[in-house]
Length: 237
Ligand code: ADP
Ligand code: MG
Figure (spheres, rainbow, N blue to C red):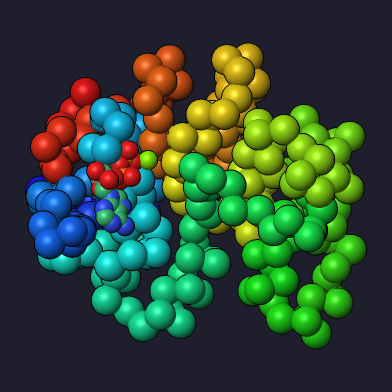
């Protein structure tokens, strides 16, 4: 019998270890995490506060380096690449949503969403496609219910609205993988469901792979698979 080769996981981590040194002591937050996200997969990561969920997501997003183990994107080791190469991988393959939105205060909603495209293309190439990019950014913001807030600066937006701008920014580069850290944490239950509906549409319709950190069981239940971080390792929840 011939094995059909499986496409490589969008992202996989193997034996991931992460330690933080603080105040003379060492805290081992991740103690050998193994996890694979299949293409088009939707995995929720749950766990108590301080269990290492954000740490794991940062490592998957190549924002920080593990002390041991490896992060593979599309089957290729990525965590040990140069900083420049990791930046490019992040800008092309990944979209990230952080717990604290990281929006630029001087830019309005549309400009914040466009920022990753400007980084990718550089000023000259940017001019050629500025109009299409603006349309794409505005349609994303409208899809997330912010059609009436396109020109608002972050300080003129509520926490939930800033979070939705951050999600639109994560998607503007059309990534194949979205890493989202408690993206509905600052939203009321109904807006949270609305965001999840849109993310599920992108997952099912466009094949966007999603890794979503949440402490909300109702949100986690929307994923194909739920894993729990316990004592620095993942187990199926
Ligand atoms: P979670 O997202 O599950 O709440 P985190 O990944 O943010 O957990 O943090 C896991 C643990 O690591 C916490 O105990 C936190 O205090 C600690 N930690 C996180 N970042 C750092 C850091 N940069 N330096 C020292 N300790 C950290
Ligand atoms: Mg966290």
